[in-house]
Length: 593
Image 1 (cartoon, rainbow, N blue to C red):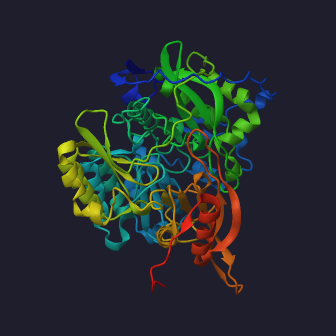
Image 2: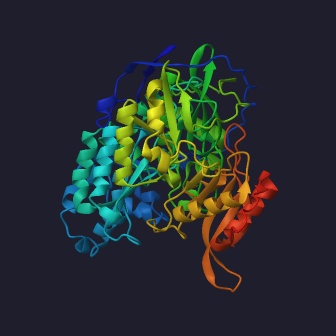
Image 3: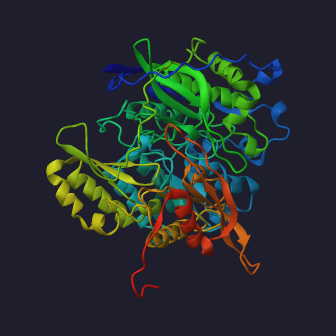
């Protein structure tokens, strides 16, 4: 058992709430795992011209802005940032004035239209111009996916006022998105979020997205380390305690981070820009670092070792150094080539590592440890149903939320269950499901008999539903090519009626090549497209991916067949299930159509 002391980067005016040392948090590490071989000898760094290593941004009036000499060939989003600092809408209360202007008036000038369609994303507000003109999706920050009944009730109250336009989704980054929000209401909603301990700041566009951790953190008898304290301080650091932190709001592109806490790798480290992998070194607990994992329309890449280890107290320091290297040196031209891995490719791992080292307070970074704490032969566990916690007399319950979609009444009911049977806490997962922790064993039976868990959110869902994930789709998202959530449920239900399988088959749906539904990590992935049917008619379709794996032997799936019409998917998926996954056709009941 080790005390956890977090060191922060040099104080600045935006970090006053969290500078200094945070202590008294105790974490648990399991030092008994077999060590893995050390990383191979480091390669010599690439030869990089000195002028290439000049930072592209500079600080002016408290905000980072792209230097004039680096503005040739920049993408449209970068031009919007140059023309107006997005964070002023939050930090200087610009949203208050914006919300008073009639929406039709905002569309009359390019600058105010850019505020609505681009800059408000820094506040977590995404205008749904194509499908819900004048309405916004609001994305929250929810480190480690941990939320409370009070927070859930507040979000339910927000979406309830919007009637059929209001609903909520659990995302593949373990957080909430709420829908139907109107701009005049946004300032009051943001204040309400603060009152219940939530924030939407820095949750979209070129920012650090929600920090992901083990959904069973602190309650799992087999966990390596409780990820919650690390993610909480990372959130505090990155957002300056939700007050807004311009040090990290002008990144070249979005950036994802996770802290691994279990052998199950529920956090999907291989698809994050930075993944902290638990490891000891000379008797100290800390983390090896993976960097560069990402998805995009044109390229997907798995994270690679940085050949670096940090003690637990330097988790924040190294995060800041990596973000600064990316902020200072990353590409700002073609948006498809602006993620951090493109910078790592250019500089080489050693070159990128050296830039990180320059930005560490002591300009030092230890090499990776061979004392990996992750059991790479571990079989990933299913969290659905009732499971004992490490705390004697308590259990947690994993429940299935079909494709992550909830209505206001659903959220109110889940908050009630968390209060009545647990500790008033809910955990969100990257598979768009929910865990209720801290249930007294004597209350488990009564909880399982609740109508909500018998009729809608099942603790033991059908086997093919367990691994079903779907992005928003074109019901709300302007970039989605096809509808995803309803089709995902319908296809899965029909396939399950036709075949029997012995294990869950993870199926992910995404409406467009941006792959928010993470189809490349699925056993079977469906990426929306338009295609031709047998009569030459243009119809909704999918490109089908196969072979994605998660866990210690993670692998991104490959394209299997392009342009399958959605109406033909059921027999197509049935054949894949039989040929690739050992499924068996069910015998039809007599008279069944």
